[in-house]
Length: 190
Image 1 (cartoon, helix red, strand yellow):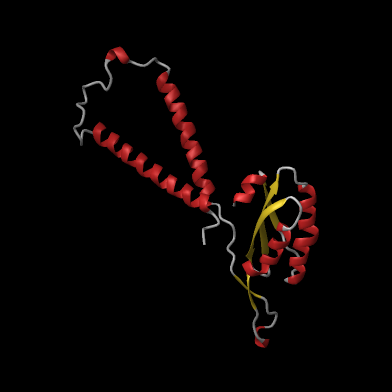
Image 2 (cartoon, rainbow, N blue to C red):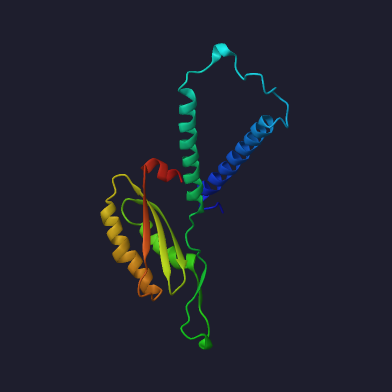
């Protein structure tokens, strides 16, 4: 089964490749500047004097480098934000009377099927994280562009989540819902 978070794997791979290339270039520049590598003599200019850039080019280069560095840092920080783990819940109130275990993914499967049946919804996925004492529900819902998001959200809150909360006997179930507006043709291809 394919990973549900393929973009994160691609992002980490691209970050790693970019870091390796930048470290290699930086090491080369430092080793050349300190004359450990004698690729270019220190007194030789890198460009002919007839090709000297205007005076503003170094400033623009520094600004662009800072902006790219800040964007890369933001991208890196976004990779570190993780959601709580999902797993197997133990639902017994009194362990001496036996135990009941439930896979969190199995618990949300009927709710996902229900949400996918709502008008305008193409696909849905859910992840139940945390523990039975501190649960957290993460939903991703792919809808048509013309779907009534307010109505879909109302039905999720009042029907789907309420039914799941009742089935799991939870006093509260905080839910985070992410809507993705899909084109009907692209949604059918997936």
